[in-house]
Length: 194
Image (tube, rainbow, N blue to C red):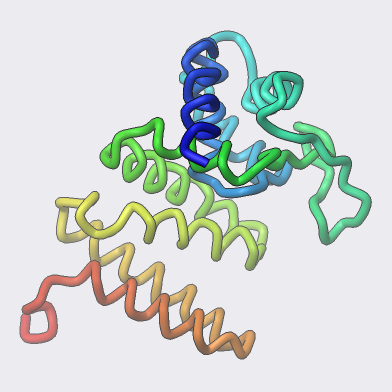
């Protein structure tokens, strides 16, 4: 298994900066990326890519064997957007693991926070629960230590509270409880007395 990861990392080092960054984006998002997520992040990451889009980058990574492309056959699977009706998945979880480990912990946190904050407003605008929970998960993976401003921590605690309430409305009490705990982790120890 370690030899496989070493081989994958060696192959990743051969990628252009755009392709490597696209692989890192995909690794942070998770095992699959839907057209909605691709479109939102394409807008957020426009400056990061030189004359191309995130969808184009993911397509090139699929051609190189890191990802697979799937045509969405059902609305629930993913919806048609400006990036098309394709979703992308890692060919193997070891590829995602290697791409994720290719980043420093600080870069991972920065990316998770950036992607979560980009996805959250769109999730609210589209009333898309799946996108909402993905956004909150991205923010929570970044963790409270990635934010220094107390006001921002309170805002993110509130986002977790709202997402937890939404999970409770769906009778997903375990997720609701976890979100409430994450929200509290963003608060200072003395916040209840101030």
